[in-house]
Length: 107
Image (cartoon, rainbow, N blue to C red):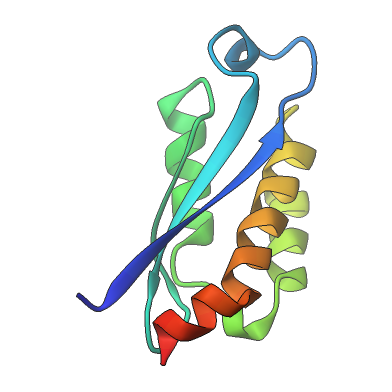
């Protein structure tokens, strides 16, 4: 298999529709093992439309380039209440990407 999956988690803010279903937001990223490029993504936002939007935004980004550019794009383009939670979940996933276990997967 040429890909692997990481998941990042963050707490959702009060007053969000998704909070009625989930306490936390999960962003999953399927990554190319060799290059660290996001092949596919999913999240536990309340609407499919928001999930598809984030999927399109994240797809193709190379985590080997760092996380800051991706976080900036989320800040600029995703204007929902969960913006900070999405960014926090991405940071959590990125930490896993950088971690020793992920380095072993990419070798």
